[in-house]
Image 1 (spheres, rainbow, N blue to C red):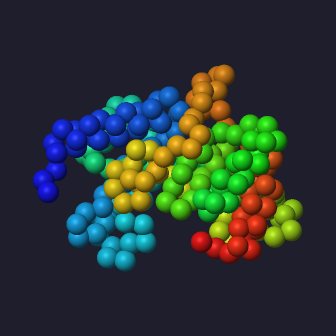
Image 2 (cartoon, rainbow, N blue to C red):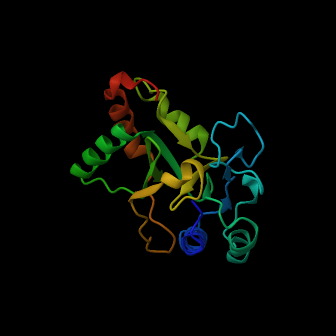
Image 3 (tube, helix red, strand yellow):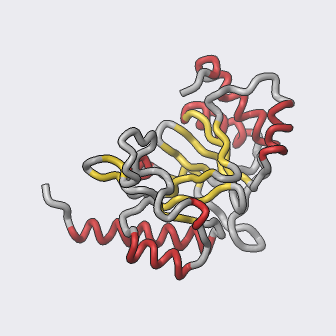
Length: 212
């Protein structure tokens, strides 16, 4: 079946709009992700663990909030690339298996604990939070009785795919809770500390906290 040019054009416009919203409105540095092709990932690694869903060319260090650069990437260089947000500087996240994430969100909502944006990734939920250092995160985790291996931390040097995706696993990314503006601009993000205990507990309850 031949691809519909109008549909492809609409998808490209949606990715450009998402990249600009993330970079300009949310103030999150973004970079195009690798592409998923018929012969595998555009990075050229035959054993790529996340084909079409990771930084490659340009590398993650090139992530920017500059609207002109973002437009050039998604209008000229990589119009079909997924939008990746660099974590650690302006935004961080903690992700956990989807069932545990849904349970944690429901419980935190019942407690009326404010939540920031939440992403649904393939099989996982990612709760976006204010930036944290690895040292601070380690200190908070050391206070937990046990930390499941299926919790993942998206801090300095990490990245997250953003909707609407573009290839590979990025094509199945959506907002569970969309970003909402902060009073001083950008996006309101909670601190990770008040959420961490519940995220750990929800993951432990899910099949004994086994990794997924």
